[in-house]
Length: 608
Image (cartoon, rainbow, N blue to C red; front, side, top):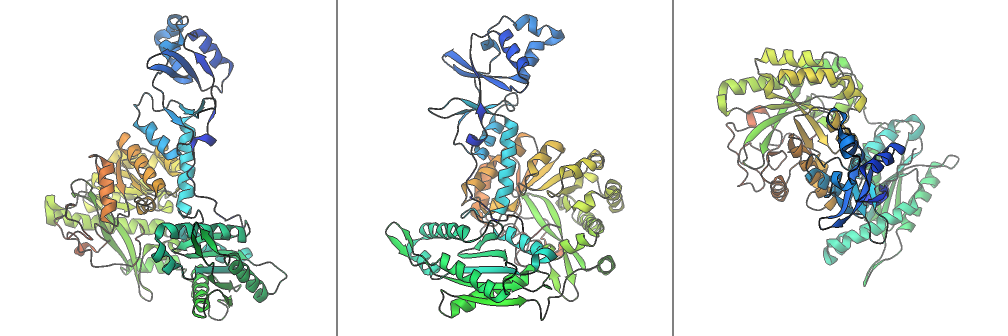
């Protein structure tokens, strides 16, 4: 296995990005400055030392300086050569402390006027020389930070639950990895009583100590995660040449011993005890869910036996392997033909007024044997079967037909738009634009009512391939929205390469909005980025009234939209109470607009 251990969770600062900057005097001639830039093609800027009030420190950036030196009709150099550089200096550069976080610097950059937004940032650190960093490097570092955040538990810096489950499934389906694959499940004994007695702040410190001990207990190639609360897990490949049972027992005892030392926090001492369950996969195991469940049950057996011990289960999946869910194209087409794929709708409302702006179409599968399946349970299998583009088109046609009915029956009280997701396969389909426009024509709808949500998972190369098709859709009036902004490193890069009408902030950041300073800083930065470029922004996964109130404050009266279980769960078309009678001022747990008490599927809602 590759190196899967996640490192610390600290926010990156400018200190690691900054490079030295040359400081010149304000009396230096523009001719001398021009020669400095010409002599070094990598010299991006110069700091200028001033000598008067309001002119103590300035900045000269290469591109605007050379533009001014060229001037209209090429007379710029003639006019400026003998002038002091002070005349062409920006005397209000952005100067930040070296310890400032990247997200905060990005926010400050976006707050500046358009003429200064792309100038270098000067980095000051008392007792150290002045340095500089380019805006490009700031946003590149922020992209990496967002990608890391999407995989990391904010409190401990270990992998988070989503990342752990994804990588576990990959390990279980890789023939060279799953053999002798062990899952270690850890629960701290007595932690709940300790947490209740001493408070969550002290409890969080204990969890950080435990995370540090687990980092030292496992090898760099092992994936270690905090699943939630005081539960941790790791996935490990047992060494070859040692019988599975003894190897698994040795692994579990090593983890138990690693956590057995007392934890001292000032005057508080917690006896280190943990219950450990270890489950080992057989060679026929094909899903991580089974392995995780068996390790969890083994951990509970250890806890029921008094705690502070290890329980094993080996050869998981050998006697009764779980039925693999791998529908082929024929079964998927049959499900489409028989109406098993249902489309539910989730309202998107304006944060300031509660006005219904749109509804997002989300697919479910009413499977004849498995029951109602949420998207996360089948979309991977649909993609594996090469059927994702077909399903995209089916959902689009169903959603447009429903939207057309709303318009006929409700008139001006109908929703104003409908959001429909497109998969990566659907995005790359050679008939993407004609298929979408044909579906709109058959439904008798103006293209302006459709918002196509582009997948964040699409690579830059893939988006370059479909740039023409996306341009055709926008020219026809279809709106384009980037889904899950912030979920990966490519998100911010997509903003610079695509012409977009909207973005949706990934639900991970909304979930941590009130408790994690990093999440709050990222949300503010993304709101500022969207608003400054005139792009509509929607916050996904709004679950609580305090989250909504925080977003209202951050929006500062600018058009911002929200969706999530606080507003309504996704529901069938007939369950949305239209005309919309929303308005957010009276929200407590749910608004009385949609009948949100009617659940459609448990757990978080994934978009199609």
